[in-house]
Image (cartoon, rainbow, N blue to C red; front, side):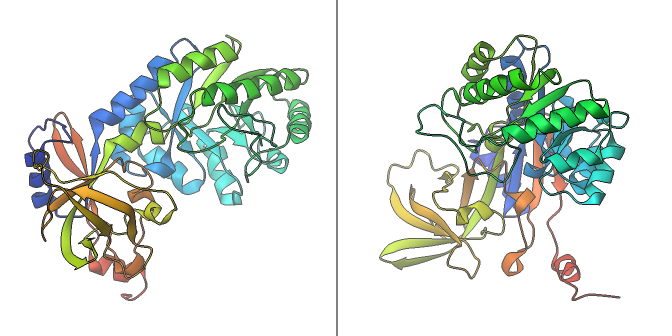
Length: 399
């Protein structure tokens, strides 16, 4: 049942405590207003381009209600296998709203892509055998930067990538596509993740523009897909304006912004389970690397706050650790927070992607509940996993 209308304010401690009491912790919250607003920001920034299409990667938030919000906001869905295609269709996506690209897809994945009517981006020349003009609305080719892409503020090019085709492979595949009857192509390049380099999108657009001029001698290039990779704090209006200077006006622009759109729309509520005072104080939480797998990556650190304690002047330095029996289950760095006690509620910010969608049952962790906040109220969009469900999925409970 929907809850009462909320202010949708991440700083409203009373609302956050009430949600934690109602649904328990750990608890993932998605702010629907933020999701819709971020999609609108992207579309408004690129409104100068009539062919602009925004796509959201299903892998980042694989839950029906957020995906429906993206669709309602005019955003398509990016899929990479049969499962994400099915999830997108169940969320309400039609063929014209689906984009498919995969690195090493199975035959099942290809069959699902063809049957869905999705636009397809090929990752390697051999994948061309899986498509034909009668079944595929739009065909794109994924480009490997080959060390030739120069990003602003960096030295040299980008070589390390498992994705895409070299320049020569692109040209050969374009020629083969022309023989099959395709009348135009798109070009796609995703060069990085969580980048805060002003002009990054323009650099990608310029790289694809130059390649498109070569490909155009074989087939017209109708659109360029700039991928994702922009940090949620980037200036999307500035990025779009620089892209406008870099590409011909008649070429459509596709974007696949996951982090920029969804990261600020997620918050994970957790409670303090225990405190160890050994040198620096370590605070144990009821959330772990099972809910936030990225905490294991070097350099990854989340912003954490104690709701309702913003006015407390006294601060203490803590290490934050998860409940899992693994030394990697540790929120890197030191956190300066108000005084903490067992049972206190903490909020982990900017976890709208790479959290529940990539969560696991590591060390017996049960998947947390997920709640969507909208102007009309709050409603659960995924229940908390039970012990019996976990045991059954592991094969302990059969028959």
